[in-house]
Amino acid sequence: MLLDAHEIRAYVDGMGLDVYKILRRYPEYLRNPELLDRAFKRGVPEKVQQRDLVLKKPSVIVTTAGMLDGGPALYYLSRLYKDSKSKILLTGYRVEGTNGRLALEHRIIETKGDVLTLKPKIEQYDFSAHSGDSELKKLVKNFCKKDTSRVFIMHGEKTDISAQWISEEIGVNAYAPSNGESFNF
Image (cartoon, rainbow, N blue to C red):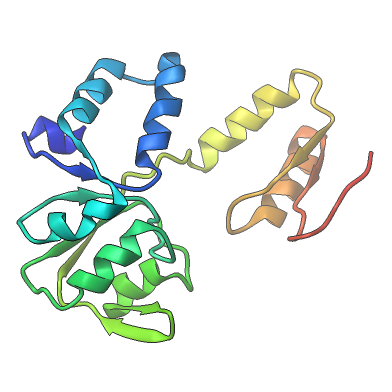
């Protein structure tokens, strides 16, 4: 929508198309569904078979895999990493140990055993759709008022601290499971 507001036509690749379809099923959760529709109608859905054609001309490509560890982003980077005239715009948070963090901090990414030094300019923008700490705590409190008996913290850097806060402050059993851990109730 930001690109569309500046009349920049973008190619859209990856799961962004699927996400758009899901978002449109729930317009009540969107601030402005009409602007989203307009942006997607003006955008150009990208097909795997046409990726090389897009790279032959000046283009703006919006794609998924923000951590740069998979998806179409790696395809484009593997072809543009030497191009100092290109620019990589990253949105949201970059987890430590991911290619996204390596790109930001060291201007490199790792792909299939190769280490690529990135020549394009790299810029970071905070377009994160995640709620902050205070919003998440408010959300959990509201759910727990509705007879919630257990809370599982599944995402974040300090899940154990969040689970402890829920148990102590709200009085609801909270868990921060490890990968592969299972629960039976």
